[in-house]
Length: 118
Image (cartoon, rainbow, N blue to C red):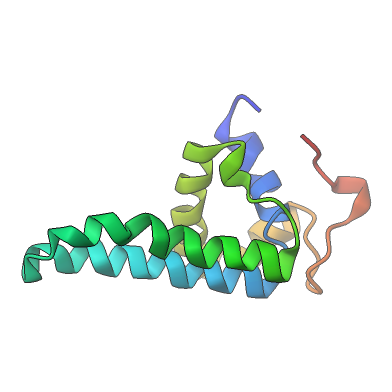
């Protein structure tokens, strides 16, 4: 994939199940909270825990719920950006429409005719 706009639907398909997305939201929110609190608490050592906080939740979701390989391994930067975009789209109420456009059904499956393979 050469463009993020092409990656986004693929990313959503790889996060089709609500539980996987919920764990991503938790991990990304924790990362944001840790970054925001560091200047207030002087806890710059928290920077060492950021990957564990963010990726720990996400990878647990992929291994235990989605049962797929995280997009991070193939597209690390786009995946990181998509984690934050997915949280923002969820918080602003746009995820349902994004998922539908990507072919993700409300039951957490992907329309086989619209499945993106890489």
